[in-house]
Length: 153
Image (cartoon, rainbow, N blue to C red; front, side, top):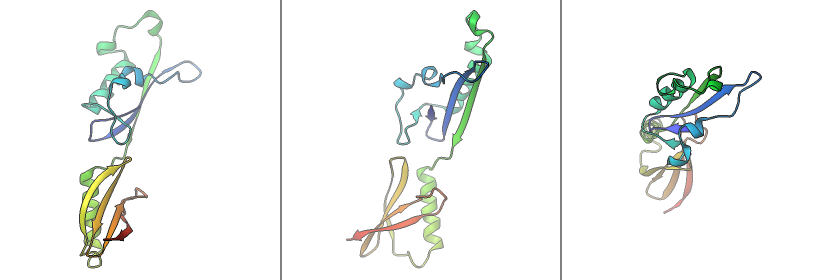
C-alpha cells in the first residue's frame, strides 16, 4: 500500500514467508487503509511515514507492541518491503519552472506563471504572455519542463 505524510511517498508491503513464497500483503489491514484519506497520488495519508515503517518493522521483528504472538505465529518469518517513490512537490516544481525560465531567457521573459496545481497526481503550471496561454509540465518526469501552447487570449 502507498503511504504519504506529505513529504514523501512509500510503497510498503508486509508479508509472511510460507516456506515456498510470500503470503498475502498485510499492510492494508495493519494500517487500517479504509479509515485513511487519500491524496492526489492515491497514497493513504498518515502523520509520519517513518513511524509507520518503524511499526511495520516491529511487527516483522515481533517486538514492542507486537512481541506477544499466538503460538502458531511464533515460527513465522515476517518481512517488510519498503520502496520510496520519487515525489514531486509544489516547491520542487516551482523551482523547476524558475530554472527553466532562467535557462530559456530571453525567449520566455514575457511569460507570467498564473497557476500551479496538482492534477491527477501530476504537477502542472499555467502561464501566459501578452497573446497566448500555455500549459507547463514535467511530462517525462525527467526534470525538464515541457511547454504546450493552449490558445490565444
